[in-house]
Figure 1 (cartoon, rainbow, N blue to C red):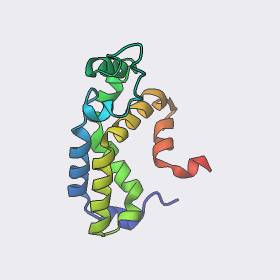
Figure 2: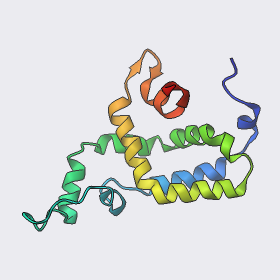
Figure 3: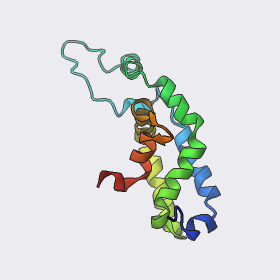
Length: 143
């Protein structure tokens, strides 16, 4: 079984990896980008329900601090795997790379929260097989 194609080995994605990592690592757990993802609370009974302090409390209630930190610490590996998974779409096309960078920039808080969630709840392993990695990098897993 071939686990890679020669194209994946030949291509130098170092700059793209650096750019994607830079965008993702700029996200903080208690930030405007993450707060914008929260469902707005009804303020009829509590005028401060959507205040920055309250929203930060809602974020802390998710208990993703440790997982978020782990994701940030492992961004080199994650970004490399994500780009290798998308390699067939990128080819050597500069427009595709710019589109990918824009997509990452526009969705960086969502991406980081998704990675933190997957890391928190699906990081368990069966022997050497990580369920999180299967879910993220083996799309044929879903059928």
